[in-house]
Image (cartoon, rainbow, N blue to C red; front, top):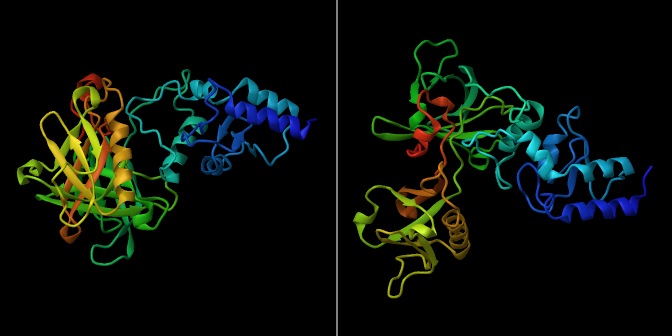
Amino acid sequence: MGDREPNKKRLLELLRAPDTGNAYCADCGAADPDWASYKLGIFICLNCCGVHRNFPDISRVKSVRLDFWDDSIVEFMTHNGNLRVKAKFEARVPAFYYIPQANDCLVLKEQWIRAKYERREFMADGETISLPGNREGFLWKRGRDNSQFLRRRFVLLAREGLLKYYTKEGGKNPKAVISIKDLNATFQTEKIGHPHGLQITYRRDGHIRNLFVYHESGKLVPFLTRNYLKQGFMEKTGPKDAFEQGQVFLGNKEQGYEVYEDLPKGIRGNRWKAGLTIVTPERRYVLTCPNEKEQQEWLESLRGVLSSPLTLLNRLNGVLLFRPGGRNGWVWRFIPVIPALWEAEAGGSLEDRSSRPAWPIW
C-alpha cells in the first residue's frame, strides 16, 4: 500500500537530495527530471523516459508527480538513485565513448540507453567490449540533384577502416570508398527531416563531399566521430592570413585562451554588429554574428570548452573549423577535441592516440 501525498513528498525530496545525482537525468543530464524508472531506481527526463518504455522487461517508468507510488517502490528508489545506479551500469565506459547530452537527438540517447541497460556493455562484471566486425546494410541516401531518397547498400569494413556504398543492390563496384580516418559523421535530424538522419562528410579528389542518409530504425549507423557543439555563420574581420588554415585550436584559460563578448574598441563588423573576440597565445580572432541570440550561443559553447580541465585524452579542448559560405559569410563549426571511436582504426595504444586527435573535415 502507499500514501499518495507523503510518498510524493519523499520522491521530491529525493530529487533534491545532495550527493545522489537525482537532480539531473541519469541518462542525458537534463535538469529537473520528472520521471523515474522504478525498476532500475533512477530519475530520468521525459525524452529518455520514452526510450525506457520500449523495453519494459528491463525498465518500468512512472511520473514522479502524477502517478501513484507504493511504499516499497519509494523505498527502492531511496536505496538506489542516479549515482549508485550509474556506478553500476557505467563502470567501464570507454574514455572515447560519446555520452549524449540533453540537447542531442533521440537516436543518440536510445543507443546509449540500450547499451547501458539492455546490453549491459559497461558493467564491471560484463563481457569485454571487443572491436565490432564488418557491418553491411541499407541506408536511404538523398540524391545529388534532387531531394529524393534512394535505397543504397553500405558496407563498413572495420579492420580496413573503410566505408563503401553501392548504387546497385548487388553491384560489385562501389560508388565511393571512404577512409574512416577521413570521415566525419553527425546526426542531422532537422536538416534531413528524419529522426535517424545522418550527415557523412569526407574528402575526395581535393573536394569535400557530403552524404545525407537515414536508416528507418536507427540500428544501422556508421561510427559516429562526434557531434558539433555549435555550427552556423559568422563573419570574420582582421588580416586574411589569420584564417589560412581553416581552423582555430582552443585550449583552456590556464593556457592563455579567452573569449570576450563584443568587439575590440575601434573595430566594426562589415554587416553584423553582434561580435565576439577569441584570444589565443598567438593572436586575437575577431568575429561577428548575425544576431545577439547567435552571439550568446557561441559564447556559451566557447566558454564551456575553455573552462574544461585538460586531461590525457584532451590535450586541446576544442577546434573551430571554417570555410567560405558564399554571401552568408563564413560557415563555422565548433567541436570538442575528443578521441573518436577508435574501433574503426587498428593498432596503437590509447595513450599514443590521445596526443593526435582525429581532426574532422567538412
